[in-house]
Image 1: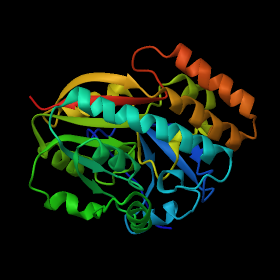
Image 2 (image 1 turned 135 degrees about the horizontal axis):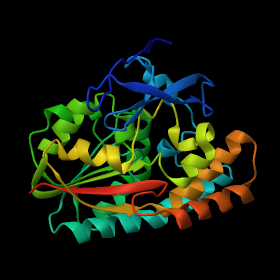
Image 3 (image 1 turned 30 degrees about the vertical axis):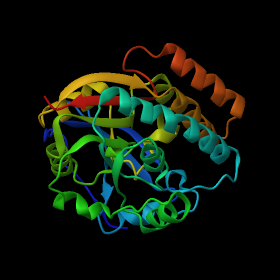
Length: 291
């Protein structure tokens, strides 16, 4: 498939880059991709990346959990149970951060989060690029999602915008992030959840770390790279929260890729949470506000 090589950092434009790791797409294509580290802003990014016309081919699998409601297999069953628990936590977080009710969720998958938010009184709009996921959202969760292409045509403002493990997939990082920030109302909130490549489990598993998920994940963030990027668009960083279940889930997949054991995965997941200092969890929730 056509691959596009990038000679500059997609976040800051710097050209001083170094190869951090070479990672295999264990999930689908088995192709190798380089992770380039920007020496200036510390963003990791997948290089080369598939062209926009072909990147959708790397998502075409019934096993892609974020777009699936299947409970087949241990990992999917665990994912389903954890999701039902964390959905309630996410909605509680929204209530804590805003009294407003206008919610935009970008990358809504099969609509589970929006269904929970709608039950809690939020007026919801969800955007999702995958047609199959939108179909499942409607049939299983009674949530009508819009195509992601609608994003740049929106002209309303939202009290809260959520991106749960989505920013790492966004193809045009600068343009899309700029537009998203423009849709946040005054005193509104942008919530971004992404994997953290400086976590203990990422450092332990290295090229087997499942959260690299190349080439579907185009960018790989740390607090040092993400916070300045979003603040440069006009929002103020407020706080960061850990996603403690992610260390276990990602470790289970990582052990699967390297032929390890479930017991080892649980041990590494526990160690990752135990060793995590502020900003070093396997995945982080970043909260930004428009002042």
